[in-house]
Image 1 (cartoon, one colour):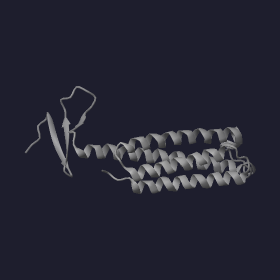
Image 2 (cartoon, rainbow, N blue to C red):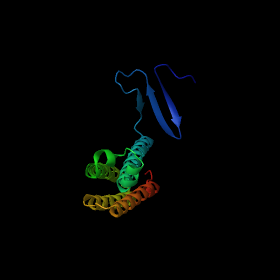
Image 3 (tube, helix red, strand yellow):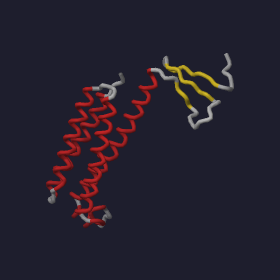
Image 4 (cartoon, rainbow, N blue to C red):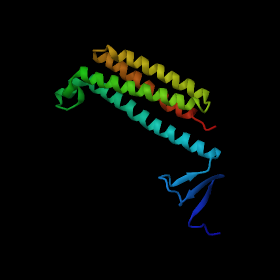
Length: 171
């Protein structure tokens, strides 16, 4: 059977996707409202969240490591954020990024709660608590040893985030 030029259907794993070439809107790819579409949307949202989560947590940890190693970087004539802008401003960048991370975690937790994934919600709340503990610890630190402790807390956040992926299931 030849598909018509006006529209066609495609079946992938028992899910039907409709292509409508007649539409006047910017929405070229129209989907039939079926169960599989929700899973695709949730999966895409989760993927984007985990990409952003990984980027921000790695960035925070690397900036903390730069603050921790400022003396060695200065001796090697490296141009890092703490050397260019100072420890206080760089620490404020980490605090700002941590607030962004907390906001992302709250947003993703609220989105996940709509799909009744209780185990993941509990795990995300635990991650939020650890990130808040990190924020509290970074707020008043000054020594390299304290920055090392903050770096280890961020490693814990990264590990919990990776582990939470295993709890993400499609309903």
